[in-house]
Length: 383
Image (cartoon, rainbow, N blue to C red; front, top):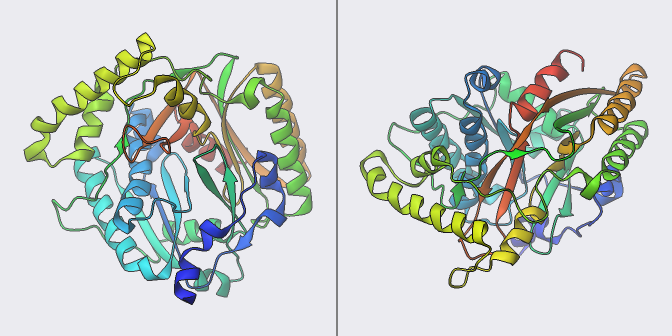
């Protein structure tokens, strides 16, 4: 019984509905010691983005989440999409399956996307033994989708350990494929409507959140909230429908091995064409409800999150961007935070859907010209 309750820890967290709650530590609960933290990122992501591989980089980051969700058969998995990587909390009873999924996705990313994914699986008990913590909150993004928020400094420590080569997951043998059912990349870039798409990262200067840092985050979120729909980059009526053959090709690589790819590509292309027609013409197709799907598309998007720091990809006017950057600069000068920003003309969307007819499809948002990866590079330079 105790193991079952432990496994259901995330489901039992009371969700908060106003995003300002990410700055309220009372919304967070300690992750049980028996859990593990899975972390992964793309090596040399900024170079890959400079070569125009931004869709592939985002697909690689989302594939980690998809592989874990399917491999563990856990739809309600606490995770954060980071653009060029991801992190997820895994119950100890499922750590062996998580290891297999991470090994398989490393091989898939290398062989199908031509990128190097590094990954690690770290016991929460080890993180705490080093003086850090992992605390989780549950943000209710919509009626049907919630996203995990991480605090306590443990996620940042785990990422540093992974980059140092500790707790390393080795790649599975060549040809091994993860289960990436539901992973898709069918949307073309979403163009800014207010002035600029800005990817923002703000982290505490000492890795552990302080009251001053929480106040800073509350101020930044409040400034962003002043924009139409809080700076949400996805229009309320959904993104402009366009056929993305590049997205179809990448998705076919996720759905089938090379020997079956010629068979699956036309099926995905036809699905994409039907989806395009439904959105372009505003019509339903069988049980597919166009209006409901467009509403869910926007409300289910993860354009803002918190994992030991604030991450947002928002669509805002340039004056509001100036005020946000000024507030961050004041925080940095006071030794409260480090920050990085990256401005671009569009946002990218990568999706996970259990079925085309389900409402709990998830949409991961990043900047269309480097996004979080470039903001993180600016962060390493001191913001």
